[in-house]
Image (cartoon, rainbow, N blue to C red; front, side, top):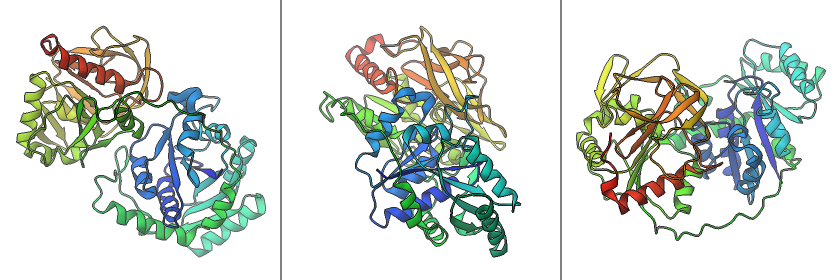
Length: 463
């Protein structure tokens, strides 16, 4: 099969922009490109999904463990090219031995690596960096290099000469610093595609610039050396599509952080997903449950506050016992207020706390959770749960009588070693769960929804 990983020597080298351009360029040639993003991430996969016109999948060795290879194989099946965008640098990772690095994933999946090198402020030294990456782990096959952010033709010529002289790695692309290759960055990385004014036009603009500077034919030739695992046959779900609970899901410019696997898990369980636009909708349809994922509500807090009708409808539904699951941005939206840049806006007001944004991260990275006896969903193991968090906000003025579903063994959460606020039938957490390993959160939430529908008097009466 054809496949490759796009990595870099260090983070913020332009991988996502180049990756989106490469994927979009190949897709408009008529190729079926299956994009993957290594590590926990929502924003980069949104751009890659847009470029490929198919859902990007996340590869996370820490959360998926031994199931990573089969997961990759299942979703790569049928594609003309499997394209993996790495995170951080080629040999960076959580573990000292690099078992969760881009390099380790590339080896495990049999993928050649295409390196993006940020050339700003460097000439001959870039060849030394490239040589060091090559000899650090000779088992990683570096199939080519793309020089990025060059200052001009002389800069490009000097680096090309150094790379060709000191290494045997071909230069397959050279991109000069240019506005066409810019994506807006802010806290937590790039602006999500669901917030961008014209995301499709942006991707095509990037594809034009990448095709002008990268030899896509040579890149494709290098990708044919992949030796990925073969997928086992996956068991079919026993539930009839659309036969289960009606679940509202907030998907708009403010909330868009959802893993494709989680959305598909709802469908596999028979749930009917109904999209809720928190910026435009004024009422809630008849729902059995509601999910509010992550996003950047602080960037749209004025518009969220202005939609008084929907905020009031959500609060009434929660007080009436509607089962709700909210992650990060969703938790922020359910709070009393959100303060960002000195501006305070009213939110739903269901949770007795306020949210304050900060200039630096409050919680960022992998978290380890342990369920408490207060967790409302059935089928809990009370064992450790691996998840991740990315937030620059903190919960302030928190009601001391609130209950919590998790003890935080690693990470920050809401604070005080706790996360997963439990209020009536709401579970709101800073932690992002992923439905790929262990007891799936989707099936547990849906079972909770069914229990609430079957015995409403037994639920929603406690804070």
